[in-house]
Image (cartoon, rainbow, N blue to C red):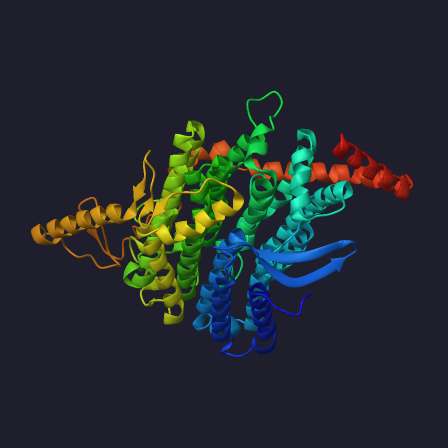
Length: 626
């Protein structure tokens, strides 16, 4: 380690200091506020690194492990994901700093443990994002896994079970990654990115397939790609309030970061396209694109079945990752930019939505969509946040989610991928249906008697929620600043760079200017408002406890709330297509792994263990050297 600390060292030290202080002062009532200030400091230090616009920023820290040297550095890709990570930590700590923290303490739980877990997640993610070689990447990967487990396990018995399930998935994925790294190290004696990229260029397609299945499959577990997705929704949904918002916003994207690093930066999309799958018309790139498409469709329609608002959004978190990966696999300037931009847009959207849902839980005590309704007059600002969030999640203008999804759609059309385009549209249809269910069953319709005295969310919760909602709108109105970050990431990865303006995408084949689009929309709303308020006057106000249907006014004595089992008819029609399919698949995979494990255990017990390990290593090395 050199004597001069670099800007990256200052950032990592500040993040480590945040973790240490939360251990020391986490019991204090001001701990949440101190955490907010420290995350703000980290964001400022990140901007000081200059990693986004210049050459990669190296850390002065070097650690020798055997004959390897661990090192850390930030480039544009690291900067982009780190900015989202720290930002998510800041708003979630802000949300937790006031009334939520006191309620959490009153329930017998430890605010200090929560703040420590959140700080540990941010720190471990910054370490992962700064990895300068595959070994430091793996170490950061494991730190993130254990930090995520700690945050997940804070929610109680159900959360603990979900966290343990996650840990099994994470451990299995980590072992697959480690096996791939061992094969690489055995071949070239180093895990530095440069030599590894050169090795991958020399290996045969069969050898690369082995590494792709091991390392890519391990990263897919963290991202929640099919068929490794079943752990994610329960683990994220059962995590305590702001912790769930943090995990939903950025945690699964660590898997996407690693996939981008290995499959795009080190291997390259061209090589993926050249790796044909025997007896099919598909390449490795096509296969990954279809996995992304199925990931965006199936979990989205599973979300449609959920009656718990937390689970509905958690399932959507899996599906939205499919859009990100799909755009990146298209690989052109607009598609890859759309995939990257959706990481940022979705982080804003998911954090705001989950915060709104947990604000409702804070006031009503439930997230059950069958037991809510009519809260729009009781929690109007929370309703506004949720409304802005669902418009963005559904990919509708004028919110941020529309821009990134439009870019993915457009790239699929221009690159001649109509089936994948249809798949993306099918996923969006499911999203629209489920987010309408979300807002309808919580805020619209008849108010329930038990919620007549419910009040708006506390100001300590409202401020970060409203801040995120404002950013969602601004990022939709003027996506240019976010696109400038995305363009820098594309350049660092060697991808075609998107041409952008303040209003959106500039392209002779069809661009997007959100400033004009939003202006036209606002003018249309203005005309509609003039017609409604100027020419109307025949409406009659109905009390929230009453209702109106079929030409009749219904009083509170007549219960006419139809939120229970919303979309029951639709579920009856489409349910048989996929009901239990992936639970069956998970059980089948588990049984297969158990069977193979028992067989291997029997061989290991009755064969000389040293000889067994030696034969296995020789076989793997022989495959790699073919």
